[in-house]
Length: 169
Image 1 (spheres, rainbow, N blue to C red):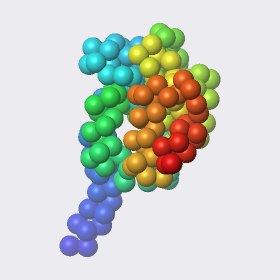
Image 2 (image 1 turned 90 degrees about the vertical axis):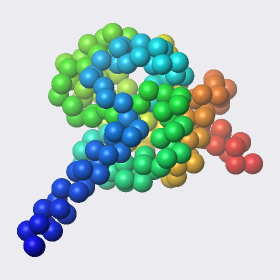
Image 3 (image 1 turned 90 degrees about the horizontal axis):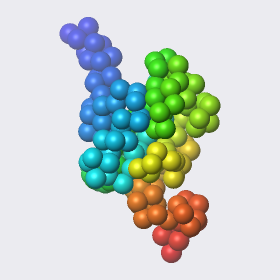
């Protein structure tokens, strides 16, 4: 009995982290040029990428809380195609503009300057980053507000911090 309990305690975190992925994030194969075509075909406003790494406690906290929230899942699935990206990944990857990188790590560091996680970037339908959030969001409301910031086009007029202040007034 103790063995079964220990086994469950070991396996449940791995299973639960996969559950959130299935709900919010689309299955990607490392070709963001193709993902962009899918976003256009799906009539989305862009692509949301959650840059992460396995041993990131802030990523894990978001995965176990905010990214499981039904309102977050509904909003982001309505407006974006959504992908996770392991910044330490060793597999080849193709960027939105067709540039090929030998590894995901190379693209994360060189192209998007992601060295710590989480980093969330929303890309428009041309593959250009329009909104970036570094670090974990504090709440589901803040993450949804980040999405609204991109969808509304407010990124063209002001930084996200000013947008947040304006929304809280």
